[in-house]
Image (cartoon, rainbow, N blue to C red; front, side, top):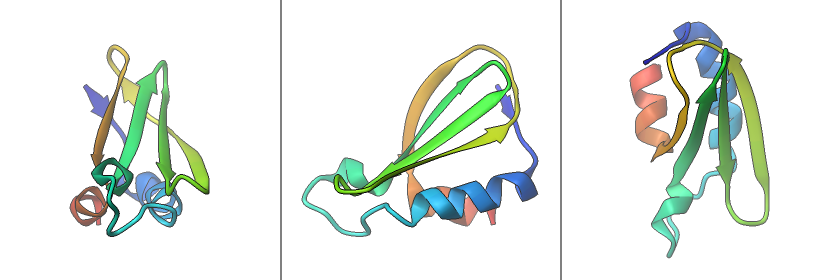
Length: 78
């Protein structure tokens, strides 16, 4: 379980989404990689030429990683 303040999440999501390809022959490039452990949620976006990683403080139970559709995640968080 991950708990993070929505206002604190929006800025880093926007930064990471800036590199995510809207259309690509590789569908995974439309996703953000979320890695979580300790008290940090790390968000990474890439278009294979540029990669941006941001961090957000969060209350996290456990650890792991997941790739989620960037623009859908942005829409949900906004």
